[in-house]
Amino acid sequence: MKLLKIKDNSQQKKDVFSHIGKLVGKIADKTLEQLEHEGVFIFPEIVKDAEDISRDQMILQSVNDTYRSGNVMGVLGCGDERLIIESRFCGEGEDYFFQYLLDKVLDFPNIVDLESDANQDNRLFNFLLFLFPYYLKTAMRKGLFKKYICHRYNDAHVKGTIDVARHIEKNIPFIGNVAYSQREFSFDNSLMELVRHTIEFIKRKPYGNNLLIKVKDEVKLVIDATPGYEPYDRQKIIEQNKKNTVRHAYFREYLALQRLCLLILRHQKHQIGSGSRQIYGILFDGAWLWEEYINSLVEDIFYHPMNKSGKGAQRLFNRNVGLIYPDFISRNSEARVIADAKYKPIDNIGNRDYLQVLAYMFRFDAKAGYYLYPEAEGSGDLKLWMNRGSTYEANVTPRDDISITKHGLKIPMDVWDYASFIAKMKISEQEFIYIFST
Image (cartoon, rainbow, N blue to C red; front, side, top):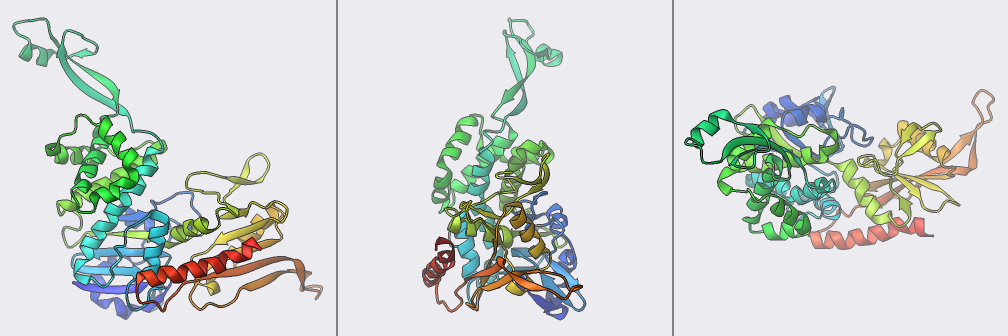
């Protein structure tokens, strides 16, 4: 296997990628949306209204004689070539920071073993399996998926369309029954059967029951809703779902769940990544993971509007104009603070980032804004005071009432195992949120 590991938000010479040239040729300068259409699983799914993750974002972007990586982490493959994108806070060993984000946001088991080069496909498969509870819970917030199913009957209680050919075949001589078919709105449909097959497949894994216990109520609902489940129908159910994907926008969470279930069940049949021309893999949006992780730390201090679910939407102007989703709005309305989570190095925060937060501050009458970013050096906060005046009048001076602060959370690098990483992260988290509690 030809393997290359790189880090997010980094730049490498193109020569470094020469031994995985076939894979790089298929992903370089392609957007996340294009890669998703080609079979790569993107988490969270491509969101058309998200600000932090753009459908135009590239995994590897050509910059002269180098490739620059973005905010995503994960595994990509093509034939015998693999590319692993680690977090930039990964040391020489395992990527504890990436694992920590997955653990805090998605309740992932500890599976990130980046040293196991020979087991990359299994690790990719585990990523898919461990995402299942999250997608199942998210989809079923909309309730059980229901659709029209054509059922065929042969009895005396005719309610639908008579099937003449089948009636002649089954009811000659006539004994009182009539063959007919009827469309009925049912929970026991091909999509729910696909979810059921995935549940039964995961149950047979050594860690399956521990994984599904997190969504035991949802699992019970699926099992109760699929009395027609038969283990030997798996391939038929897979084919039905491949041909009939969820189309209604209201059920887009079920579309994501359907796609994940197909990947899990088809991977078992060695259909993912088959052939030397197909690219496959799973990519996690570091910006989304970072924002949700920060929310877990400051949710008692800040409101957290979420553009993916439409929760907490704000408007810049009256007449419902100017939809915005600030990352964080302080609950203290007397001394309002706006904060923006940025999964990028401190030197990359600027230009459009400044304009965005200042617009939010102006909208909510906030005098203080913060950029919340991860950093490894442990440097102090950088506080920037807004200017007043103009260069034309040569009277530019800093104000003393409006400021933006770049506030970093220190990520431990000098650790020897995951337990020590967690212990040091707890200390960093306490220091990080202390500024908002004083």
